[in-house]
Image 1 (cartoon, rainbow, N blue to C red):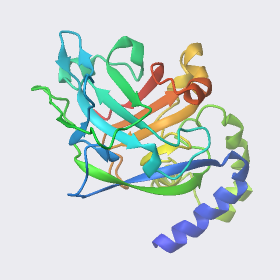
Image 2: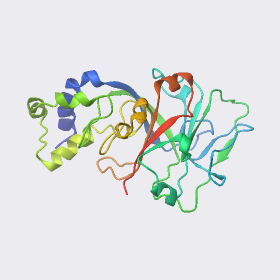
Image 3: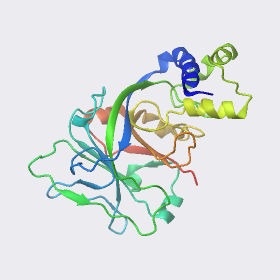
Image 4: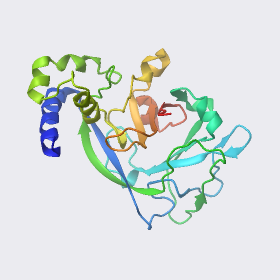
Length: 270
């Protein structure tokens, strides 16, 4: 089926689910050799001001730098900072990640976020990140970011929708699915439906990608993390063979610029 036809039938579903729409800023990883240490990026040399420290794991080894977002370079998104730099670090040692649960809190030490409310252009310094020797087998990016403002409707996985949008399933009536041309009794068509409405990709805000179910339903305390802060998705279009890291935050903490209490939802493909 052609890309244009697939897009038209997906629009039928999106129109029916318009009340679940959330604003989002999608992030396209790009090759860019001109990046400064304080620019938005995946991997590479990151911003570390004088006196700053790289988060460490257990015995003092530095965590791996995943990404940083400079909010002044991103289109404004309601509820998110308009300035400052937010960094994401993860301890990527294979044996440790093998023991990680799907849902982890930053207080448990497997990952850390660092937020600099102000970035000094005169005193920027680059820090080359370190990588653990026995690293988890996932792609390592060294790329820039291109931002694209968009809106997206609720996520659909083979089992459910994302937290707070359970009623969206009721909108998928047989009449609507027939009008859109999705036949969920057909395996390839079912796979295509979950690809079209899985909300994959890297982004800030919006709806998270969920392969099976939303981990925020597994423990009552997780339900308070209702805002998707950042999603770093290493999956390939049409294949979904890669790790996805979704970072959630409580709305009140986001409003206060407090990034110490964050939930990581990790889709492990191995």
